[in-house]
Length: 144
Image (cartoon, rainbow, N blue to C red; front, side):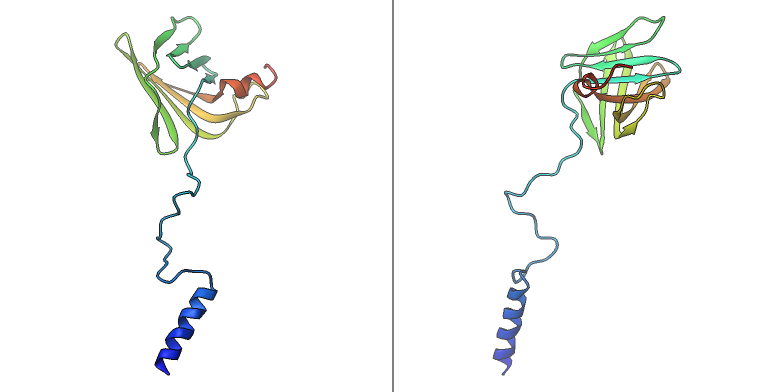
């Protein structure tokens, strides 16, 4: 009788679709799709108002532009992930330039353009806030 109950229990579990010994902590199969964070590869344009500023991220360079100030240009150090954020941390002429992008809808407050990231720039103890998007995504939108 006991043997029959064990067989019945095993058949019941098999009918549920869960293999015997399976748990919620079982790793996904090797061919399961990999879920990754935001894609920070490629070119980005970041902009801000009050004060006006822009940062261009290109394969070889990072350039901060502001009215009435010389551009701050440096080699692109590459992006590093900080949770869901993408961070570029560079030094140009002994000045530290940090760009941090955070995924999410963002408005520059002056145009109808859509940005997929909030942007923060740190330079010389100053924090500049604005929005950013991949350069190609901005090019596909109407000009402000």
